[in-house]
Image (cartoon, rainbow, N blue to C red; front, side, top):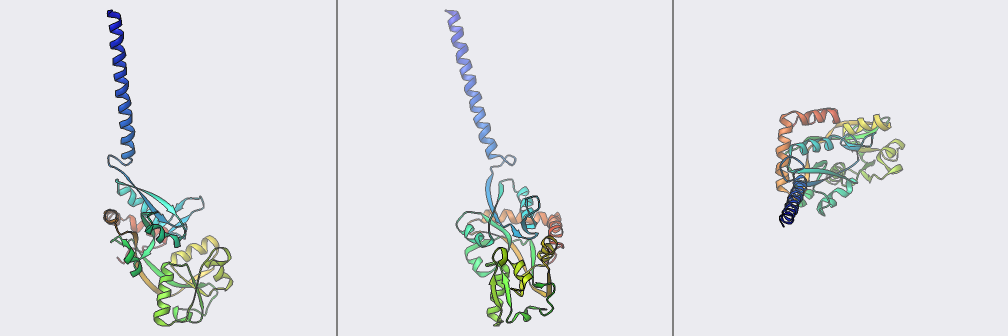
Length: 276
């Protein structure tokens, strides 16, 4: 009888210990899901960006997504333990609709402030660089020296881009007579149209021109004074004020540490943060 009782007690203890062990395992699994960054609950944030913007957001020769905006977002992510940023790449023209339909949480793609965007979306408060727009032409073009020389000429830009918004507004307000066309892919791309003379000019940045000339022999040059030196920001949904605040706090720290300036020099060829 004593032997049976001993066996029964032993079985009960084994079952109890097994249950405790199972509960502890479940608890640990749950905790590691919630503490991917330290001891803080982590919220996944989907960051919308592109792959076609030289030095800003593009795929390098090793197949890696990189560039100024991408690497800056990664530095911000390191500062915010409660968030985990994950990139989602797409065509630039799809970014705004993806933000509006909750497919992404914010956009990192050199976004300037304009009234249409302000009505629908939320910009963070801390700019992260200046976006200098210039008239850009084929390196052998000696007839176009400024935007005033584009009257009757064909200028190619990407739809909904900073360049397109600027040029459309300039054309309308100044009755400038510029024929605006929108870039496609392959033979309809900006590079090919400028190379073949099907388009006379585009509106872009010096760092884009430098990159394209080195990487694909784009044969472009910048002419004239800057058309615009706009501050650029991240773009969020209207309800994302907590995320907006934390991004701004991280940016302020990164600026003080010199990180933003160094990233600008590395990827854009100069410190485009000095005019803040």
